[in-house]
Length: 101
Image (tube, rainbow, N blue to C red):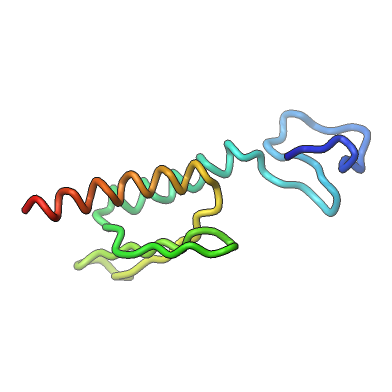
């Protein structure tokens, strides 16, 4: 997480939605979560369904598919733990609906 020793600048603009660290800036975890959640929600709202997910060190690789839209498949990488929980709960819910049909 944020370590004050990593800050290289004295005056930090707190109105920015980033945190300084060695080598540049990074987004706070909650902002990353909101960004990733929005990507997921946008795809779901367009009718895309999660067809597969694979975990890696860089994050979870989630593949969405839509039968009628182009592109038919969209792949995103989810890095935030809360975003991973979110898409997993949606995926499980989808699998329950499919298995009940």
